[in-house]
Amino acid sequence: MKTYAISDLHGYPLDKFLDLLDKAGFTEDDTLYIIGDVIDRNGDGGVELLRYIMDQPNFEFILGNHEKMLLDCDFLFKEISEESIGDLNAEQMALMNDYLANGGGATLKSLFKLSHEEPEAIGDILDFLRESPLIGAETVNGRDFLFVHAGFGNFSPDKKLSEYTEGEVLWARPELDTEYFDDIITVFGHTPTLCYGEEHAGKIISTPTWINIDTGASMGYEPALLRLDDMKVFYGE
Image 1 (spheres, rainbow, N blue to C red):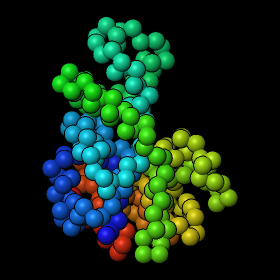
Image 2 (image 1 turned 180 degrees about the vertical axis):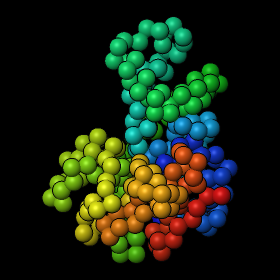
Image 3 (image 1 turned 90 degrees about the vertical axis):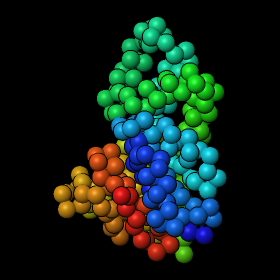
């Protein structure tokens, strides 16, 4: 039994995702933490991949900011039509435009299509996301890990995990010299490692207190699958 983590797949093709799991020797006895942002930006918007993830009993899904933006637009799925979209109020229009500006168009297109083919599937997807936690935890080979989409904004070692707001765990942007818990490794994504410098492009970043595993799949790089048992990293192809 081994434990893996991956994040920010952003519409990565399901077949390539499965190839990556095979490359790492992932089995049904193992556990995979998916640290948010499966959807948006590329391909079908990650809808096929998300539905696959929902069906896997050994996958642990942590909510990302892109899934939260989709949930904030759930009003679009109550009565989907050009007329209903035309009746949106100013707040709803702002939420939808913000989501579209962040790459949600591909996902909405796939979900609208799915709503005609399998109407009940939309509710299942939204319910799954609503029930997804913001933070996960696991002990692997005596080492404690936290899984959170973006790291911790306004971090304090004395602050309880339950005290962090959605914004602080979904939109944080840690610096390279940011330090988290001394005795726990925090694993997150959200900020592509390229943003820390060209030398980090397409590679994970590890510090004494945290690991960023968003290697930029949204930007054309391959995602990274981290095995926590031995800290080995597998990259997509």
